[in-house]
Image (tube, rainbow, N blue to C red; front, side):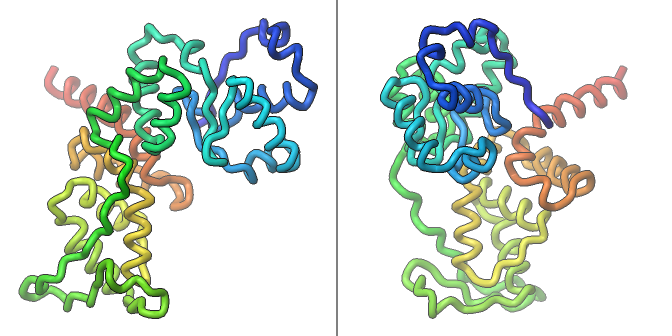
Length: 281
């Protein structure tokens, strides 16, 4: 779905903008209006994507971004994340919907980026603290590697593949899984894990028909998607699964991901509530 970004007509007469060179103005406007922007003013944008979409070479982009950062207008963090200072000040901050959107957006930003932003702009402190306190994601220590279960499979179930943990990560020691091994790990272990976010990922991997060739591959996928899965924890698992099924039915495989579920679930719950209300009235 296309986003809309409103630019004030005073943009072109702003003192800062009038002192920029034409290409700098062009990039500044692009960073406010491109399709990757988020309502919280923090979003991921790799340099190669920026170069492709603007037509500017990487060297020029880095030079201009360095100026924006030095002048504390727009920050390029870890050469991948854009932070537009004062972005949320130009949103409808009194709107409850906007406030929820900003909070949801912040949940998808990595902890180390949030920590940097908090140091740069104190006005973000309350929102960041609220998100991180509620979902316990501000700890910056790396998560321990997930050690797969080793217990015997239930009676009648296929044989459990020989999974391994942190002491066997050498590339030349990766045992190859069959397609059945991958399904066993997802369906019997992940979808029944005690940790709800791992169960969410199990249902997601199954819905996407993911096939993993070995444990390091599934572990990498878990790490990559964990933050979004944690953001889904406040919602009932049945609702999350229902949205996944809706995505699977209505969108091609490459069009949806776990973040799509996160963005869609509030609408799904509102629609479900409206249907239940109609049935009882």
